[in-house]
Length: 161
Image (cartoon, rainbow, N blue to C red; front, side, top):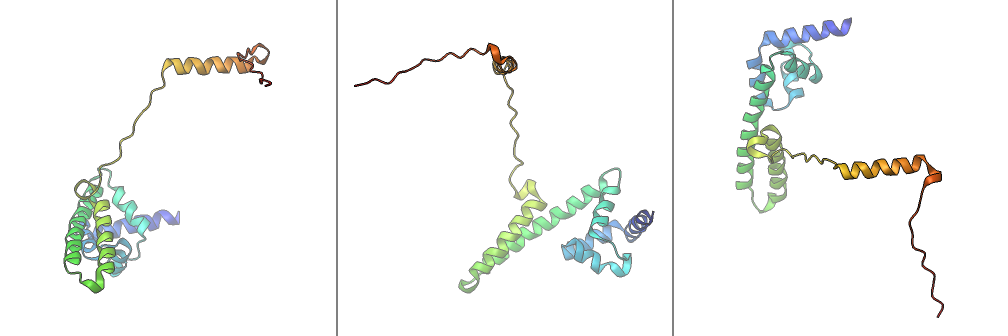
């Protein structure tokens, strides 16, 4: 299986280079594809997908948690940068500053939702009562026996005036 060899070689090169050095590079570059490209001379060619699989390959989950902590640092940094951009905006660059600040705010929310984002949505569970279930069963029985359907209706005749 050639794919398995490539995966093992990529995992080995990432692990040999070191998680700390990889995370440090990501803090500088802030983009996984560019980070992997900048490290290519040290780790060889590693795809973004293989990189994320490597992050999840740690059975304890510690590597993924450390990666998330790394992203929280970037989120805090992006918030600071957004404030600098807005504070430094002048009349000629308000739209550009707004776009950059909004992008950084959006990224900060994604990287560190607990500090800069909205809380996760709550899911409401509706429990169907027994009356509703009984009514459904009654309708099902009536449909299964079409000869026995009794329709209660009032016939209204038009008044001739």
